[in-house]
Image (cartoon, rainbow, N blue to C red; front, side, top):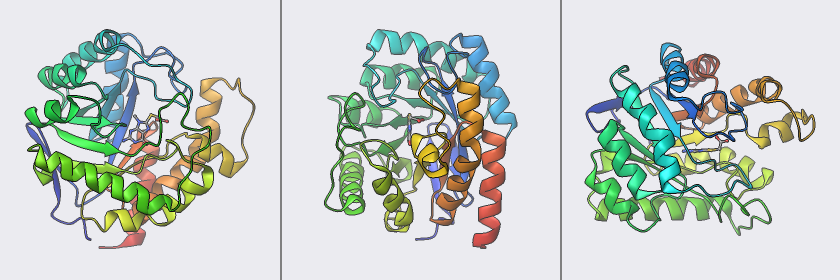
Length: 290
Ligand code: 8Y7
C-alpha cells in the first residue's frame, strides 16, 4: 500500500509520511549502551536533541527505560525523573514531534502533559492502563512487537513463522487501539528488530517487511547500532567496546539497513546518527522512485 497522502497525527502536530522520516534517539538512561551516559543531564540531552533536529530529525524519541537485552526494569518515579524535564525543556524549543519511549501509563500521561506528541511503546500498550492512557491523550502511538521481556528475550526466541506472528500481534494491537478510541491516523507499527528475535528472524522480517507495510499502517523500524549489525558485518570487537568505537563500527551497516528498510516500505526510521541516516534514506527514496 502506498504511503502517499498518509499522515500521523501527533497531538498538535501532523507528520507527512509521503516521504520517510527519521526519528532521532535520545537516551536519558545512565546505562545507555550507545551514548554511554553522556546525556543524562537534561540540558545536555536537550542540546543533543536540538542538534538531531538541525540534522533533519522530524521526531525525537526520549527514552528513560533501557530495553537493551538483559536490562533491568526501572521504576515509574525514576523514568519520570529522567524524561519529563527533558520533554518540558524541548517542547518550547523545537517544532519536531517529541516521542516518549515508555510502557508505563503514568509516564505516558506526564509526557503528554509536558508536550510529547507520540508514545513509542516497545510493549505495544499491553501494560494495565496503557491503552486508556494513550487513548486519553492526543498522541500518536507506535506499537512495537516484542517476544518476552528485555531481561530474557534473547535466550531462545521461537516462532513458527516470525512474519505472520509479528504481523498478527501488531494488527491485533492496532485493532485494540481503535476499539479504545485511538483513530487510525494516530497509529503506527514496528516489528521490533532484536526484541526476542534471532539474526535469522530479523533478516526474514526485513526481507518480508512489505507484508507489514501492506496493512496500510505506517511502519516504523529501529535497526541503528543493533547487535544484528555487528553480526552481519563481523565487526564484533568484544564485550567491552567503548561506546564511541561501537557507534563508529556499526554506522555503515546501520545505514545500509536503513536504506533497505525504506526500499521495503518503512515510513519512519529510528536512528542515532540522524544526518547520515537521512542521507541513506534519501538515496533509497530516489532509487525507489515515485
Ligand atoms: C526500538 C525502539 C528500542 C525499535 C521502536 C535500541 C525504544 C533498543 N529499539 N522503539 N526502542 N523500535 N519503535 O537498540 O526498534 O535502540 S531500544
